[in-house]
Length: 104
Image (cartoon, rainbow, N blue to C red; front, side, top):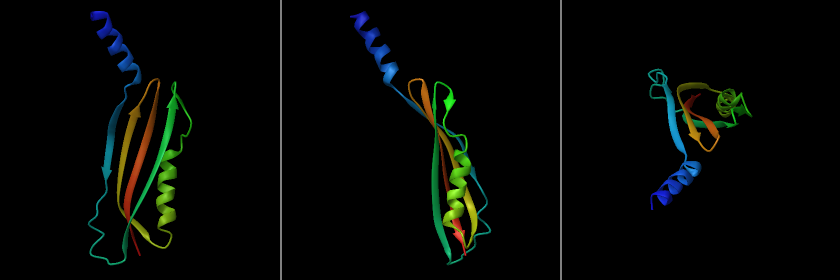
């Protein structure tokens, strides 16, 4: 019976995963005011890492560039950025999610 429990725990550890939020940055929204010309915009990007080798080292810049594309004729204010990681078996995924307001 003990061997069965140990084998089950070992198999579970191979297929299990964890998730972690590292940072959450919040910028000041006091400059937003009560503008009627504001729109909530969002972007996401990620980086896959397998055996400590990353495929996309520009993922944070890509997320911010997507915000800029969504607000071409305005100003980006009130940016919130969340950095997190999802762990797997000898691999993990770094993720960034950005939210902001586009004020025209």
